[in-house]
Image (cartoon, rainbow, N blue to C red; front, side, top):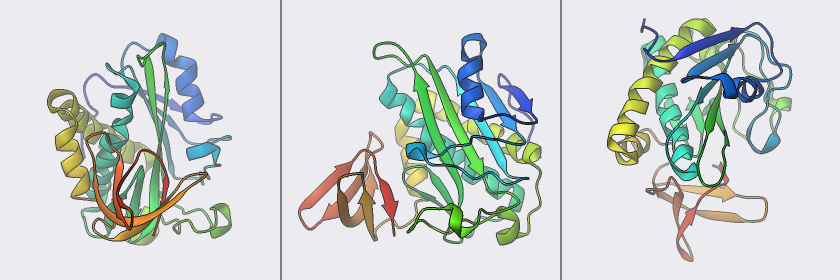
Length: 249
């Protein structure tokens, strides 16, 4: 079992509307990075304002921090968080098989969605004053199929897929420890080592996938993630770099 990382605070709530909302509330008083853990959320949310279902026993947490740099640099921490989630899953299950990372911010297990990441930031001008990294992990239960949008990957839980029965507190300790390691690497060496590590764990690399935005759909071979974190596809019309989209395969 990992130790709680030095320099990171912990704020535990029995119930809250959303750990992301709580991060926004405490941001003006926060002196350093702090993890917010809630045993129950009443207004959890995912990307693009979607509802995030959070059954009992699953992880609902947000890391609030004050990163240096521009918004585009802060946004790369979705890859830092994904790597930390991957390593936390390995730590509590003792296995690496079946785990992969889906661009831009999901963790997959045996082809199903295990976890999701959502970043929200505040700031003035071109600087980020606070960054909140919201993380949800299906530890004990997976939402039912009617709770996800059509075409989305099936939700899975860590317990059902691996038999690992882990508490939210124990999982968060592993996650916080792993995040601190990757954050230190990111700050010291930049995005390239993070990018390389993420690609080594990427789902469907070298295969044909579909990237959809509100107005476009792009089909192509998943070639890489570039230095800005963009998805790069080889398509019938050439190489395309995509900064934001939902990926389907």
